[in-house]
Amino acid sequence: MFNNFLVVLAFFILPPLVLPPFQTKPENFYIESWKKGQGCIQEKKFLVSLDTKKLNFKSIIKNCKGRDKYELYVQADKMKSGKIVSWNSFLLDVKAPTGVGSDLLTPYDYDPDKDSFSDKDYFGVFSPEIDPYIPIIPIFTKRIIKIENFYCILQVKSYDFNDIEKRYLCSINIEVQFTNVPPSDITK
Image 1 (cartoon, one colour):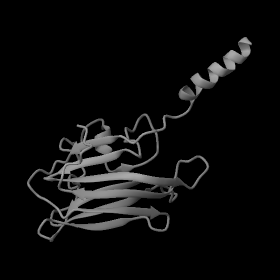
Image 2 (spheres, one colour):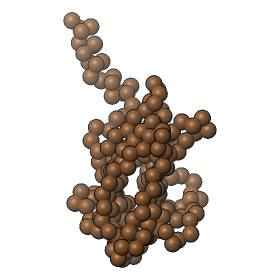
Image 3 (tube, rainbow, N blue to C red):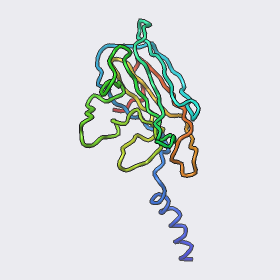
Image 4 (tube, rainbow, N blue to C red):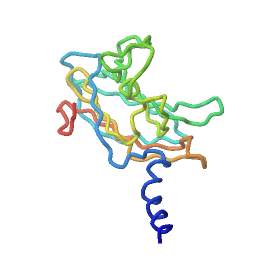
């Protein structure tokens, strides 16, 4: 009888200790971009579907006056072997020079020369990898960033692996929304 009790006890206690921490409920992650101002955009919502055949995505985001203002990119991050480890997103001003610090999905206090990074520094990285040394935001977390006077909301709806170890991605679906209205579910 005591042995049965130990088996039942082990069933409930050991899995949380042995299994990797999976996210059961998507949470929100809110940051503010380094780009401040009164800029607004034409609102839109769409789904970005990428896989091993369609690795990258680009969309033009228009300002309130209907002019091309921003470019949203979602690009595969591949190893030398060609396997996809993550998809990364960037939002760039079409008229600004590109380079370090030009990504509008970067937090206001980002410093590329600092010694350590936090999860907000990986705002645009979509990876299911759980690594204690890289503070990546859980993949299903709704990411909300305020840029100037509008919001960009990114949320992974689904993804899939192409290997048994579940380390390399083969597809991802990301819901993207641009809005001038603060989302009701912002938790600062």
